Image (cartoon, rainbow, N blue to C red; front, side):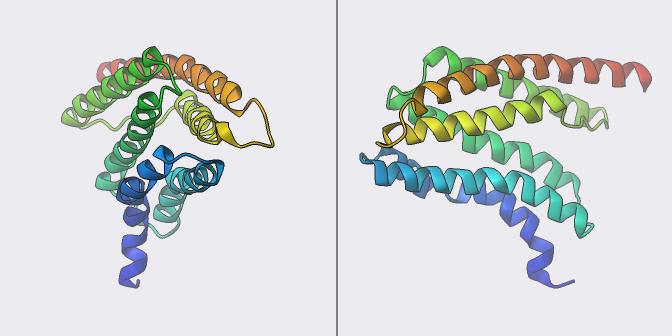
Length: 184
């Protein structure tokens, strides 16, 4: 297998971090053109979450490193963008606290599980949470788009729905860890 092909899934994973120095200033700019550019880049980076795993499975390149770095890259991307939107006062502090606290909790549970030689697979509620989160963030970035009203409101609704799913999936991860410990 060619070297570029072997490294592509991990480069896609890390692209969610590599492009933050470009994405954040785009979000901070004013004008709907900047918002569209930032939204397009955010969507592309969000899609790498599906592409990296799909290519790793297709080319038989799945690794523990990739399994652990994928959610880390997701969290770095989402946390950075949420904090940027918080700075711009486009999202509520409580929303950001709940999402970041849940993600930190899950990271801790995954680390403990790994220390116990257990791998916790992503749960469907967590995947739905990610979908609503990415959609909500995109809509909030596009809030100033002049031809389609209510993007910001729809984005906030989607983000709050992602909070509910986030808390539920956090419980699922904890329960899965408890169950796997009992079965070990």
